[in-house]
Each structure stands twice: as structure tokens, then as C-alpha cells.
Amino acid sequence: MKLCVCIVHNRDKARLTDELVKAGFKFTVIGSTGGFLREGNTTYLIGVEAEELCSLKNVVKANCQGREQLVNVMPFEAAPAGAFIPSPVKVPVGGAVMFVLDAEQFHRF
Image (tube, rainbow, N blue to C red):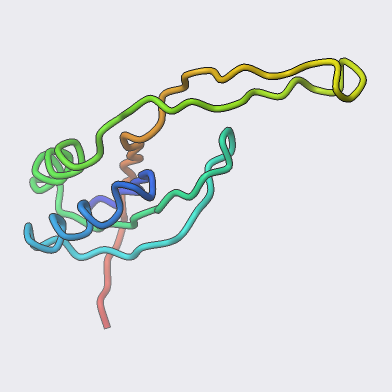
């Protein structure tokens, strides 16, 4: 048994949730926030048998696409206010991060 902790961008949440349900996976959803851009993420906790792991990875990969986003990067207080006008920078966002952990036991009550 494996416990998959999968973190995805909120833009991918609805599509991924629908596809996980269609594929028959059971999961728990937790709202979370990314550290760098401080944008909304969704964390899925998904329990699967080892032989289902490849199928789960395919569903996540097919429904969580990376993309670029323009953000204004503000410097750390290096200059007086008004001395620096930030210009937008492209950063990659989206996609998915999945941690796969061994689960010693699994019980459903």
C-alpha cells in the first residue's frame, strides 16, 4: 500500500478531481498555499495499491499542466521606497508534485 501526497495548482483542481473520480481513486483534499508565489494549491492524499501507482501517476500527469506566469518581483528592502519599479518576470507554475510513501497499514471504518 502506498500513500501519495500530491500537490497541484488550484487551476488544475477541478479537472484532476473529476478524472480521479472517473478512474475510481479515493482521496482526501486539503487546501494549501505555495511558499514562493503564495498562491492557492490543493493537496491530495491518495491511498493506492503498489500496482495502481503507475495508473495514478498517468492521471495526475495528464491533468496537471505546467505553465508560465508573469509576476512582479519586489526586491528585499534594498532601496528607498519608490526608487525601484519592478518589471514582470516569467516563472513556471502549475504541474504537480507527488510524494509516494510506504503505508504500513490501511484501515477504512
